[in-house]
Image 1: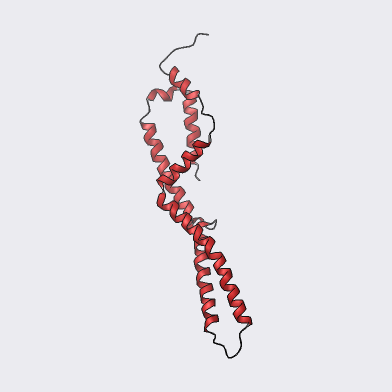
Image 2: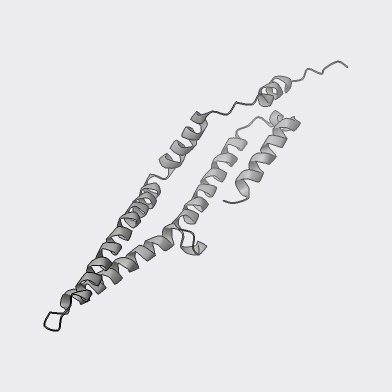
Length: 159
């Protein structure tokens, strides 16, 4: 059966070629994420680092409180114990607040969900812009339409 040679044959051959998986694609993905959300990435990583530093500090304060409470006598001032309890409560409150915003809790207060929604809008706008610049002949190729459907299924189903 003779093959029809229309204007989409060369385009279809290029589309059928698939890139082999490479680590450089992951590096490009992460560089894309960080370049498009530098401030948010820094905030999220900073809060996570602060949280990892607050947990040992809480343990240290609690250990000091237990030691002082065990060695407390009736003539000693109670103010250091109250100060340790207040410091423990305040740091615990801040740590729990950061934990709620960075870890899996309710979705309304998670920073990663807010950022994912922002990226979803960014990706959608870039995809629609790229699609609007395509030659209409691309849409006559079944393999292209299949690839487009897979891309949309992947990107539009949410994070």
